[in-house]
Length: 400
Image (spheres, one colour):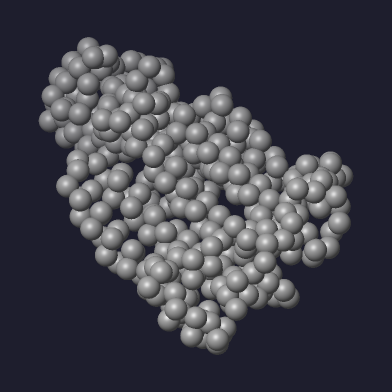
């Protein structure tokens, strides 16, 4: 009890015949081969403890339960104490990346030890047929999935750290961050799918042969999803905007780009409302990027009017003196006043100035309008408004 005889390696057969069989024999053969590579629990024990363990092996269910509990206790010890000790050491470093990596590794390490213990417990009891034959591939598949999940999170954090401006590890442009994150996730998921298929004895080459017909059917069924996917790739490659940019769309949305994903782009408006726009939609719209160009600054334009009786030179001097004292208006390029035409009630003009960040446009415009109103009142400059004159003519006057 507790020992299994070695069987021929089924993976030595032609992989194409394994993939075409389509029966449970392939998975069972692979599971048996995997199980033969895993040592029994008695092999892990010291020589002094092996005679005592022979007594436990007389009860296979009890033996499996004890082995599983031992591995569960070992996994809990590693997660609660060993990793905590490592995290205390990494907390003394200047970066938070190592702390985040340790936090992401807690569950994968715990699950790996636990599932490996289940494989060892199953083999040590000698159960290799029936449902027990599927324990090894199931356990290995869960190990691959949990490590893939951790790798997806760690890869994203690593790319973010390497692309941020305030990081001493900066190695890449922040504009390439979304493309690298998406590419790394796709590669990790492909590797995960390949490993899981190999664990279950399925030849991926055989699946690719039939993927053409399935791909056509999926393409018609998920054409909108695929359109968003390809639009997302084109957006990341063409880079009409990047994370942190303020954009305006034809549909009226304006906000800060907070996420560029495979399927959609997210904007955070000035009202702290998140707007999710499919990439297929935003890829076909005209996009006004307020952070585009050579720098982050932008020019604001305030539409004004002054009365026809006003001295235009005086109005311009008053406005320039007022805006030049504003701390959030840049000195270069310098602000200016431009007259734009004759309106119904007064002369149209614009007061223009440059600011550092597009998100401050509304607040600075608000302050400038208040200052303009106070300045015009101080210098007795009339802000015109529509006026109507009514003339009442009596019947007696009409007859004269």
